[in-house]
Length: 314
Image 1 (cartoon, rainbow, N blue to C red):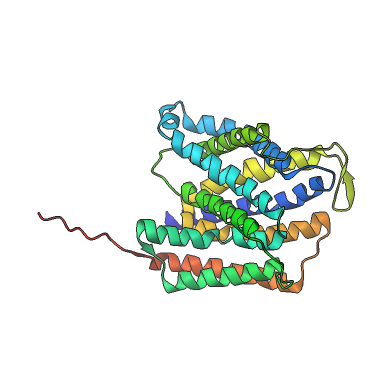
Image 2 (tube, helix red, strand yellow; image 1 turned 180 degrees about the vertical axis):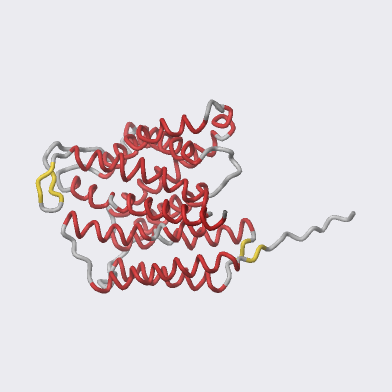
């Protein structure tokens, strides 16, 4: 049964990475007409919650005690994995270029490996380490950071907080101990994340602003509500539902590395929808990321679990 589960998990993870990868292009088209990152993130999360909620309630099957027992987990997931990953990233790109901000945020898979090692004693083998190095090198090429963009401390701090949110997303997705069905976790996280962003907006922390002007997608004038609906339904609702389900099947480590395809997908969709043509070096980076994911999968069977030493006297 392991092979079919892994195959299903990989397909779900790729679907999640592709749908998440669309968000940059759609959001960028809205930014050009006066939408702020805060409004875009809030509306995206709210629509995603509406999409995921019926599935989450159905999967729960009346076991409402699971929600009460995991209220803290759902709150943390909504604050860190949903709100944190989006809001902190947008704060970072207000102060630095998008490429460096993405590169910092997508050190999350390495953070997941480190967390599993420190918290659960799952020491990565050399093949997994090689996969991490290849994936990091591939990301550097995909983001094409040869321009030597300048960084400031505040921007790096926000991007690192976004990385923490992304790492939390992968770790919590892979955790079976809560008893929550994966779609219920996704729906609850989106609902709590929307509530948190709503509070931030009311407090004036989240910058708000929108427009009903047409946007340009793939060279065509498009009504503003088209990218808004696609952002909410596809890049939020579907993306989180498939991502959480993939995490349960693959585990945090492999799920996080396959999610790196989001960067490759984002570059491709930016080329298609907003005419940002990727360079040859970026395509080479995508191949390095693929090699890194394969190496991580091969290294899964070589993880060494360090058991704690029992010093009690029997």
